[in-house]
Length: 442
Ligand SMILES: Cc1ncc(COP(=O)(O)O)c(C=O)c1O
Figure (cartoon, rainbow, N blue to C red):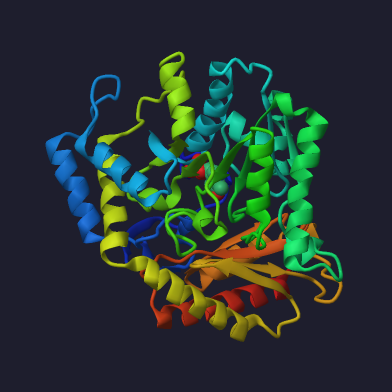
């Protein structure tokens, strides 16, 4: 028996031994089409020669130098590349080793920003239901994932949650998408006033909802209204693009499509594409300046922040995406994937909704298309779909709790940016087969 304390103790996993392009091969020689990039991580596919060469080159020079003493060429170049891609105002990059660390740093940095300004009462965070922001304590506190929070609830810090932007379930009859979005955005203002504006630090949201909500795309005008409300009460806007950022939705940052910019944005998964663990928070000039000219230090650090080998890998991944124009492919194949999914699943009785952007798609499943009644949560349809997909050589990302945190099911697809037209058709076909086989079995 394996000695690894795995995510699901007791369940045996195949052993991944090789990867090429959008495929992973296990120790028995079975090949899997990686249609979700793991969890929206592998944006460049597996075993890209340029990234491998960049990692080897960095390790040959120096694998690690501690950031108390040194910076490194790949960290400097990666920071420049990210800031060049970001809108004016986002000027500095804080490197960490993953998504939760990025969110944790952003949340704590928001608090320190207000402390530097003497507004020490500000310690309350507002986030959204059905959100996921990671597993460290601050990230868990602002996230809404019930099962992850349950056992540790007494340890969490104060945060409150407003409605997500979820038109499929919450839009009222007669309401346009825009009207709906403005209505739920206005919940932020109501919540700030309830808590007291002088007590609120930041509003944190995934620009496009991910793992727990099955890819929630904001309605037109939603984030413009959110930005206005944050500005009105001097509340920081932190966008969590750990999953949806770095090109996944067809633009480097998902917020570019919303016509706004946040005060901080967190990125991770697609930043290093899985070649190395890395995350970052991009920070606005006003926050950086307040800290630099105030106490002079962000009181927060990790041993592996700005790790040279991780930065070298991420730099090579980001250069590959830029130099090979892969975001064009994200947009083209994203549309093709939507068409293929609609063709394969559109008329099926279990299909609730297909939603997404770029190469980031969620398929919401329902027991009844008219009432939108979810499947019974006790059936664990998510686990059944995962098993059926793996049996068919497909890696997808099923989730449960989509509708209200407990019930509701979705399947998330986030293939690598190199996916081809033939492959998206194959993905749609295999995911349809897996869903149908799972529904039949549960
Ligand atoms: C939006 C979002 N934020 C944060 C995280 C946490 O990232 P990590 O698992 O790298 O710690 C995730 C992971 O799925 C995520 O989707």
